[in-house]
View 1: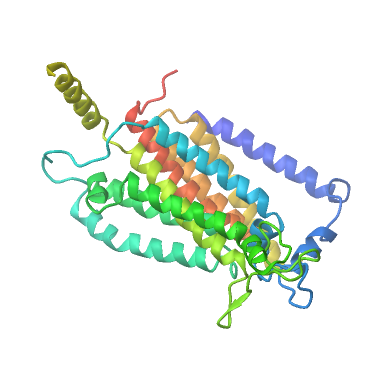
View 2 (view 1 turned 180 degrees about the vertical axis):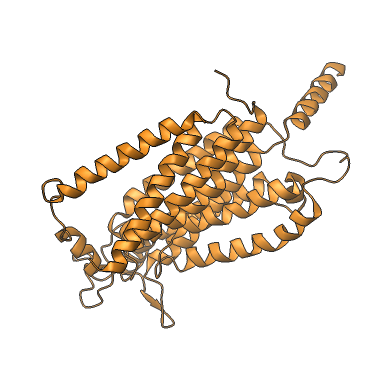
Length: 275
Length: 87
């Protein structure tokens, strides 16, 4: 085994660095106290006694991601969607459709298929729970969407792509779902401004709870006694839709059977020459 | 620091060493499919480390992306190219 030497050197390096850090912890590590900024964030993430600074969500990460630094997240979302638009543009003109004839059984063996019939349901359920409880427990829209995208990947591998295409999970339906998600994020971002325009008050883009300069406009933190944290629940839900659909499009395009596309292109060229 | 905390941190440190070994094997392995599996092992250990370091938010996005989606992309790539790494 020629790898053993390398592995031993690696372990020795790690152990020696750990030894140096552990024996000089007072010199290398500056402070073990929680920083003031972090303390403020942790305190104001759910703080109903001061409406002007809180995000009304007990989950610090979600309230930072979608409220305290909401504009950053909007740009992050934009980067992700530009990447997916790039993937779609690369596969332009390639039809995702069923083949004219299918030879034999598609996909993996019966045992794998039987197990996979159960698992995607569980994955989607967990993903929905992660996304819709994103403002209460760890999780959120992107996490839930990425989890939900594992289910179509599993079906793609085990049942073949045609199983999904036959059931209406194709590029166009996923693009529609993704566009609904994006539009939802946009509307939620401008919701406070729209309310402000309707009621004649001053309001901000991406505003959630009332702010010192816009004290009259806010999105409801509670609906029917349930905490939804204003805009956070809507952001999480729409991001979930958009991320799950975006990943599904990319995987549908990646697992495209190349032979089928090439024969179809050849046929189209031949037909064109005949005309 | 209590005794229990020290034990848990020790387990985390041990897991970190194993993840480094998995990364090394993923880089050195010539069979790319095996390299993807080593990379997935490293990702699984990282998911555990994130959990132990009390970062459940990043963990929830790391598990599907690094254990599910990323190996799927690389395996699709290997299927369309070659399985052996050429020198």
